[in-house]
Amino acid sequence: MSITLNHRLADKMTEECGVFGIYAPGSDVARLTYYALYALQHRGQESAGIAVADGKTVRGDKGTGLVAEVFADTDRLKRLPGHIALGHVRHAGNCANRAVNAQPLVIRYRHGSLAIAHNGNLINGRHLRQQLETEGSIFQTTTDSEIIAHLVARSGEPELTTALKRSLPKVRGAYAFVLMTPEQLIGLRDPHGIRPLSLGKTPSGYVLASETCAFDTIGAEFVRDIEPGEMVTIDRNGLHFEKFAPAAPHAMCIFEFIYFARADSNLLGKNVHLVRKRLGRRLAAEHPVEADLVAGVPDSSLSVASGVAEQLGLPYEMGFNKNRYIGRTFIQPTPELRTLGVQLKLNPVRQIVAGKRVVIVDDSIVRGTTSRHIVEMLRKAGAREVHMRISSPPVIAPCCYGLEISSPTELIAARMSVDEIAANIGADSLGFLSEEGLLEAVDLPAEGFCQACFNGCYLVKADDQWDLDHNGCEKEREVQS
Ligand code: SF4
Image (tube, rainbow, N blue to C red; front, side, top):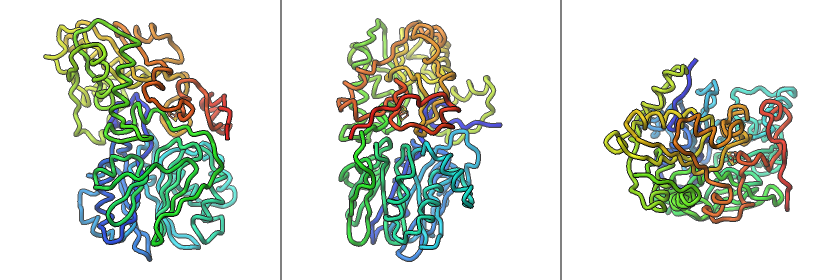
């Protein structure tokens, strides 16, 4: 048995995927997609893939590993000519079948060929899969993309957009899909907009991406976010927008701001780094402490730590060095090797922390194991005091929308008080940002966000099996139209 040591430590919520799409006649779309996937690499390191369309056919190439590993032989890109492309980076957690689940999926069916890739999780996916299998469908992967592909194929509709409009009412959950036929690029977002998807413009066409940092990388300009429940079609006639679902409360995952998104991305018109700095200032105001310096756990907490330092009037220091070159590293899941895995990734800067009272800032505590290692490493490096500050409220409920938060029994904040957690991880003090503080710092309407893992208030009810497995998703937020 093995586990994957991801870009982030194992005891963290991990994003499912990053998606990208481009329609740009006259451009080397495969290469632009390759560059864009580099920018989205933080959203998934298990596999990467690119599919292209040239007006007649759809073909793809994919594999396990980082973008640079999968396309190390850049001749692979030359074998992908066309004017439309889809790209995908996948986080697969501890799931098996990493190779077979790599996306985009390219399928051929009665009405032609298409490629499909997604970010998110269909919470009734298991139910839909069972139903489709009972009716004779054969699945090759365990991805939600394949469920959508089957629904589209079985709809009998020759037009992909019509097939999608017939299929999507059957699915529930958090998703952003990009699809491609030989002639069209399509992007769509779930009715609550839990997963992000933005539209950009290049000199010769349009692009879609999970995050705007991908636009900067390829010189595209941001146009706007795809609306929740909206589908955009891009083809030789230009852009066409339509709603495929009735109006529903917006609920983007607030962890995009806290942790998932890259600091140079913009979400809902706000720069992620600046929001994180505000989270830091508010966190420090809520939990002041006398100390010598402030440091963040790289990378997502660096922006927050700078805000904490500013508010406390303390030096902002590099407390940890992060090894950015680990990539996909497989280690045995014994406690000793898990510890080694954390140390491989992060190493405290002894000369900075030795003899000092250190405020260490992180984005979340899930099981508590990572926090324990971080405190331990700082103490071993000679820190006199370690005060941990967390830029999110305590995570007390699992996430049913595609992020790997475990069952409530594994969530340390669901079992212990803040003081008990501080003792458990060995910190001199511990402070979590309040829900009010989080929303004030984000500075957008509260009802626009999913915060279910902080309050157990789920917007979309999960299926019965998910409830049984996780004992969560018990409350459903009232749906306003
Ligand atoms: S439950 Fe938490 S992690 Fe999951 S979508 Fe909602 S805010 Fe994001």
